[in-house]
Length: 279
Image 1 (tube, rainbow, N blue to C red):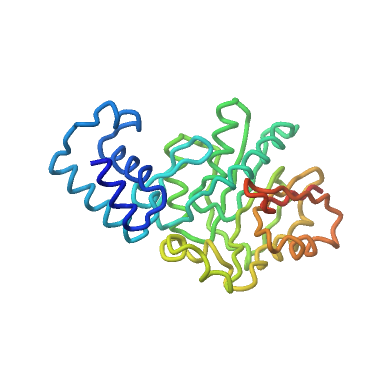
Image 2 (cartoon, rainbow, N blue to C red; image 1 turned 120 degrees about the horizontal axis):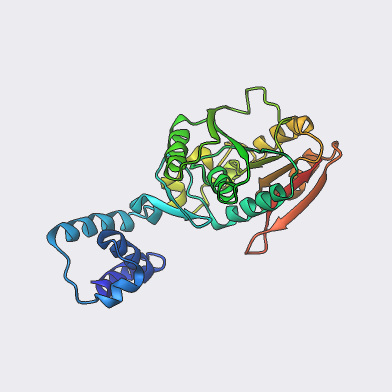
């Protein structure tokens, strides 16, 4: 079955065909990948075959594997994921690590984090879970303009019994917001310019929420808003933003009238991906 699935996915131009088949079978059989090879000759039951058939139909339609399985990994955590939110990317883990390193050195008690546009809750939950595990007092406010995304984020937080985390419906583009009480602000906002949207992979374009990918404008809308509210940050606070590398200079220019220390970090592909602003 594994070999057949690999060849079938190859014929249908599915990326990583063998890995895709392995992960589908692991989910159906509740196996680890090594178990597939330790039980290579195990036949599938009719119920398992039906489930695999349904999975394969979705995969051939280019539905992202994470949406098919209803789960994804972020910073070592298993998160629920579906069309209510963007699928967390490995690059965003870099943002989480930067925030954690900064907050570890904070003298605040509790440390306070604001996650703007929380989506699946991946950033807020990963950071909160880290400090819960280290017995550090923390408070996280995770906001989003989508009730559906907030519900998903709450479901993920409940998996890890995170008490000191709030999920609030806030649209920062139209609502007043102060950053004064937070030690760290993180955000992975919609930053794809609308003109670039059609060039995204089919998997992304057809299945992930459009409003989590593009601002329906030039890709700068949220950064303009961040520049308007950044002056409310407390001294010694930090803002960490995921950015589109093509817009780096334009984003930096939005903050040029403020006395911020700005640092740009690159992703694994060598592209500008993270902007750090310290007051």
